[in-house]
Image (cartoon, rainbow, N blue to C red; front, side, top):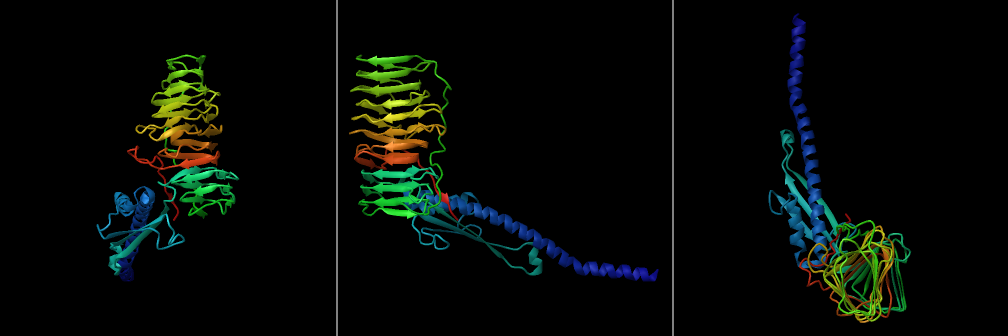
Length: 419
């Protein structure tokens, strides 16, 4: 009996002696878990900061630090608060993209006091997170060839090509860009692939960058308009008439205009629209949806469309807008501000746009199709080309990026997280 009492007392002593160690281990596990949780939150904030800074690189370069820190703060890590230090570098100071233009680095550091582990004498622990985003795709980039498997993402042949903005090519091919016999004046071409082919061209100060990270569709956020799957309307041919107004009403038309003057279209759903001859056609502002296989053909001259968006449904035919002396301009406000042509991603019909002495202002969005751009007036304020592949044809192709008429600036908003 006495021996058993003594043994029980020894166990109690050992338990008491081990208790601080056990508590310390439990506390250490809790602290490690808490620090890992903090690290994850901090990494999210660093990612947000880098992307926000990358978005500002070309749009508002003087604000990239402020915007990056603001984004990090929105995720719970405000510079100068609770021991948090947020540093934003452009170009990055560390990592594989150190010193490279167009990349923004956000570093967040915070000293966190040990809680339970302090019992064992542990002091404060420094937690850090770092992220890098590439902003070269934003702002001054307004030409995107999204086809990653395309042998040639962008082709420039025999064209005097002038652009105030950069070109981004997702093709992994070594000839993602093919240019020959051309004068090229542009800030840069950024290519995912390892090479490009430029021969017989006067490239001036244009920068060619290979091995950039792939860029996702910068206009994928646009809502797809609701359209009927079929058109039950009748065909209507307008020729030699004056003062005609075309309104689709509850049905939709296959409309053909030839040789008419003062023909006015109202927005709505159409099966197809074909314009030929020396017409004088005006499109009133609004959204025009095309759903039939006849597509959209502006072969005629003197077409005026201001404040319009042409949407091509899933089954719509090809787009050809090559008439001379025409003016096509996107809306400046609303859901489709800055969007002139919008082809449904499931539609792969090619498009050809741009005619002699014509103005094309807005985004030409053909995400899964080939887009041939014949150019437009040098006075066109801005033109954005987003397609699977982009071909520049004709004699002169001018692409400007003056978004002063758009209160929200360019509809292109993208940056890519690379580290």
